[in-house]
Length: 440
Ligand SMILES: [Zn+2]
Image (tube, rainbow, N blue to C red; front, side, top):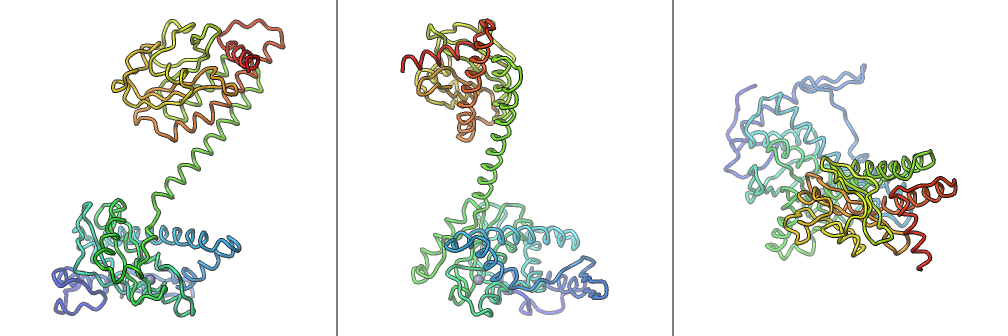
């Protein structure tokens, strides 16, 4: 590490508010030293900087040409959808690279202070050819929810790729710049950060300007900025806040759908075997518990007397009486109303105290009715998911509920056709189904 050789006004690779210039001035020569140790060896196809392998990538291939490729893959008439996909993908990629580069650089250069860690980012950025960084004095880089960074990236490689290719975009294009810078700062401050570009040269603006903040405050920060600059409001692009969390939710939805399909497949295989209706009900209950991370539950059916028979039940306090139970309490509401219910605070629910099982009231509860057509024939009850139940749990069990009812009823018909007397409570499912058909 060499000593800083110039005054604080001698910053060459970044522009920052005067009060934090000294911090950047201390780090600038450190980063310069790092990049001066570059060894390029084309005979082996390697570039090394500071002992790390680097690769050179042509800027346009990661920007305008990538957008074009994705548009071709999506096909005609889907440009907006394609651009959104490309934008999200490039943001995530930039964010991951920025975060990873920062962690590596901080460790290698023994940088501990968050501002010192941040200050290496824009300088690293400049040396690696992404852009020059100009940080506004309005910024407030603090390691909490008040974090706010307002900055420009003159000479952004992405905007240049579009402009040099003679192309204009209707929205900002410097998404890797936004991703990389927020990834670097996230690693520097140890808090989640995202960045959005509100003005972009590739979209006809005079600058590429970004706002960086925690995900929960970024929309508010952008709104505040626009309010204070009504003359710029018409030009600003405020609808491109990175959708990191929307994508996360989409991934979770895909995961749940795949899980549901797997359960359906296992259930189908099980139903084709020799399992009894009761065994099938136990199997269904096990799958429902696993899917919702519930520790206990039950599946039961309404009997001819309008009371409740448990078919399968799990948990540490399984009730001794499982047949002909009076319908009341939280779970009774599901049978009476025919509506699924989530009760995460049973003691706060007026119906929460009274229950047929006595053991199911003190923990979060999810109840889903089983039906034959419109008629309620039974229900699935799940309890004790530590985090409480949510809408996704409810929808998953509702999806499975129709399969549960169908398979249990079908199994009972098979049993009856085989002329095997069956007095298990599961027979009530088929009995009620038949009654409903006659009644309908
Ligand atoms: Zn831009």
